[in-house]
Length: 81
View 1 (cartoon, rainbow, N blue to C red):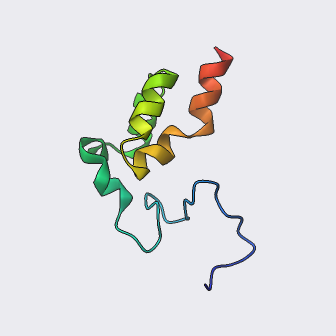
View 2: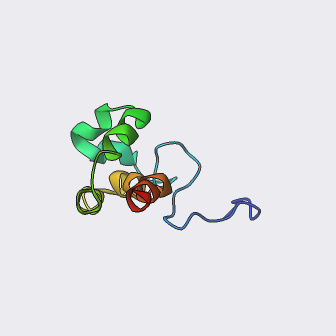
View 3: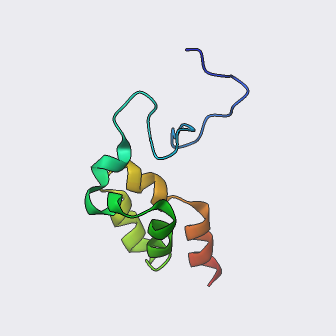
């Protein structure tokens, strides 16, 4: 399909296009409702305050939040506490 084969495929299908979950689909951030108003850095600070149940629940809302709530940094912090 013309993609560079040297770039490994992300396990969640995230492509290197910033906040877009799918390269040829609509901007995934737009589906995040009010969460889309927050800059990515601020969203991560908010997510750091949530427990594992809240992260899983929020991640079920849309593809954009799913990708954010699966960040390794969030889960490492929860299990290292």
